[in-house]
View 1 (cartoon, rainbow, N blue to C red):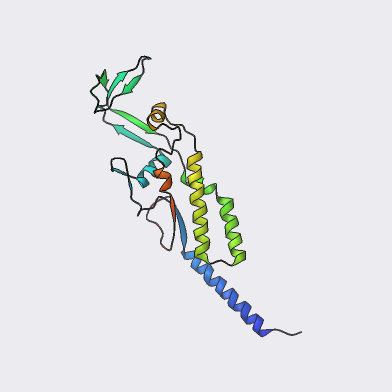
View 2: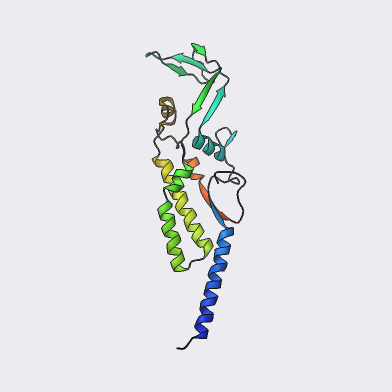
Amino acid sequence: MSVNIKALQQAKLVIAKKLEEFETMNSMMVTVGIHEDQNSSVGDGEMTMARLGATLNYGAEIDHPGGTRYTKTADGKARFISNDSTAPAMGVTGPHKIIIPARPWLEPGVASAEQDISDTFKDAFVKDLPVKQVLEQMGSLAVGAVQQYMTDLKEPPNAKSTIKQKGSSNPLIDTGALRASVTYKVSNEKPDEGIL
């Protein structure tokens, strides 16, 4: 029986290279969401996209001080009046709570891509692709899945007044800016905050 020393040495080098890549992979991660450095603001500038995303994901209870003018419609329902309007008001709201129901979108969105991400990882391993390239592909798949999940989400529904204001019944999409803010990053640094 003969042993091909050169082939064994080549196999040893291939195994050593793979082990080194796995070590690199252990220190690298893909984060998906609205990242800290993407600090774009919403509306009047008091809220960032990241904060809006968290509010919609987890829900919120807001203590409203009141003072919003309203009138009554022909069918007896209250209708808020803009502060800029000169229309007569029937009254002003008192202090109250505004409840924004939780509409989880990040974790379920990523989870919806689990099979595609797994298949991509297996395929990349067979094709011996570089770790960073594999993580980039996985991040891209996850972002696409999260954005699709946000588009498809219907429950809990928006209030009728919100639908009227937005002109849309999709609970997570108004202008599309939040959905467009979802990105991925490949990094060696663990994020300071977020869903980990």
